[in-house]
Length: 112
Length: 117
Image (cartoon, rainbow over all chains, first blue to last red; front, side, top):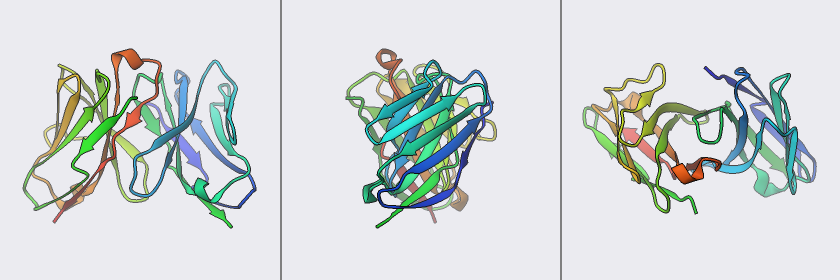
């Protein structure tokens, strides 16, 4: 089955700087890669997703890149703000309709 | 749209009792729901996939007799933790998708924090 690894486990950046979180997956058949943001005690919220027919997707300060050959995908947050502090999870699946497997999470802290 | 409601949000029960958690899709029909478990400061671990009208598919290592899943209607799936023990204390979260949302992402319920004393 699918295995998703995520790095780093914790990340602290100065407000205004960029943050990058990286994930790898094992199943080459996976074609859907969402990213979720989870605040303490709350549900995961989808922030961006990418499908395997696209190499990069951007939504304001958030971008995701996908390298299917290397089975890597990354989340980039630019101009970080205090409200970006949360735990971020990457995930992989065969499609948005199937089950998705989560990475281990990255706790992002934005220093004022 | 795509609202998923989960109830209760918190429950405390005594060891040996059973607890039922409900997951409802409020504005769409959910043909498939997924149940996850999350320990403190850890990732979401998929427990099972629940399909309306059929038996749930459990992930490896998840005891189907311990975690009973019922998906009797297109808007409701339930997870029953039977004979709960302190090690079952965790955050349980459901997610759902509908037949008309095949190209849409999964949406999660608010989660249920279970504490077994």
